Length: 492
Ligand code: NAD
Image (cartoon, rainbow, N blue to C red; front, side, top):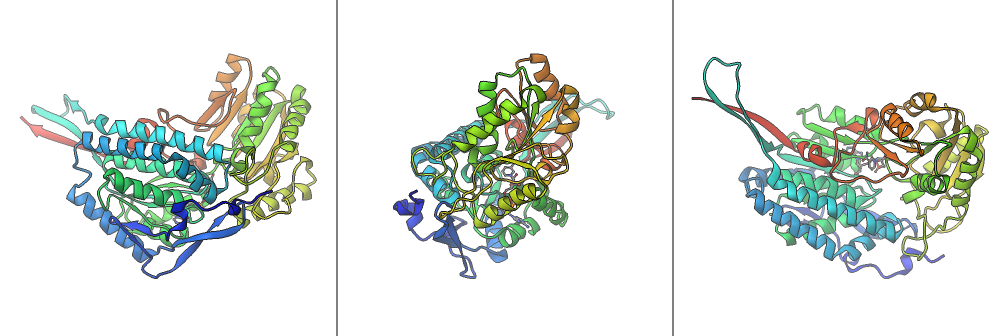
């Protein structure tokens, strides 16, 4: 198989990469850098600055100055909207380049990268259009003994830190930048240390589109250094975080310092139910895609599959066949269906979960190995009928590993689906309208997909119940997370 590294690097990845602070491209004050790896080749191809607390402080000062001077927040809504539309157009014009950078950085197949970026641009436009739709309201108040003209104002929350993971880097960044800037906030984006490329390119395009210096700053660096400094900074008003539940809990503690607002999009262990009346020719490939897409590195990956007893063997054998025939490869190789995992660390973690299943005596139907080649590949893997306490069933693996289990009837759905601290997604395959709607109500999760799995539209809220998060991205809720509300009472 040909490695990604054999291709010439796109021009952006060939130049020295710096961080964006106050409209300037700068090194870390310490001069330290982080290596950036191509996960399909398992080797580094460039470096980015290793930002730390002092760099974060400069970025926060720039964002605060831009916010207080009102260069963006007090720009008219129509002007902000135009700038964000221009930026969306620039993304679209550079979609091939952005897709290439995403594949190089993350390893996903190029077709998947392009689709994710297209959807993210649609989402960016959704929020661009929202700049002109942010309104307070008037109120005929009756509780005070006088006449009043009373109304509410809606204002940007201020300086916001946006922290994102590596599994769909461009989309994760846009999901936060678009509503934050539409609301009028100034932002500091901290991309994942593994995947800084598209974030930095977003920074270049934002300047080109006319986003004023200081309004969007991008600080690269480790979570434990740059990320933690942002979360602990007393002059940051809000953190919007997407990442693991474990780090999310650390953020809750750190945010207590100045009681900064917090939105959290966290992990999942999402169940998919296949009923025996489902169209199995559709259900089998879709349930397979639910876990194997992006090599299982999706927060809402359908990693627990429950199949009604009568069709269990057929469905599980079908999914095992899909897995057996999937083509592993670098994201640029034609026909690649399954790319590498993000890093050697992630490959090791996933292989440890597979080992735990084997040690517990769970039946392995297919996969289970890491191919002997460069890069961080793990075969699509299906385990059958693990016990409900197996680690494969309880813990988020974030790799292409499925635990498939039988169930008897809809009466078991709530207890099976909800027997986890997570509540991000759930799927149901059935031809019964009644079953579909009943399951949608029984599961405690933020997203339910019927007869397909995954994906979200910006018009609807996206997020998690329970330990899968706080708050929602998407829809009016997504911009609300970047707004404060003020009540004004005027005695007449
Ligand atoms: P992670 O929590 O390790 O890192 C996420 C981001 O947080 C990175 O930018 C990292 O540098 C930063 N970070 C790490 N420690 C930090 C700290 N102490 N303070 C501040 N920032 C810190 O997660 P990951 O491994 O990059 O991503 C995978 C996880 O993200 C999975 O659990 C997945 O389910 C979750 N995720 C959730 C969603 C969602 O929308 N709910 C979407 C994608 C990924």
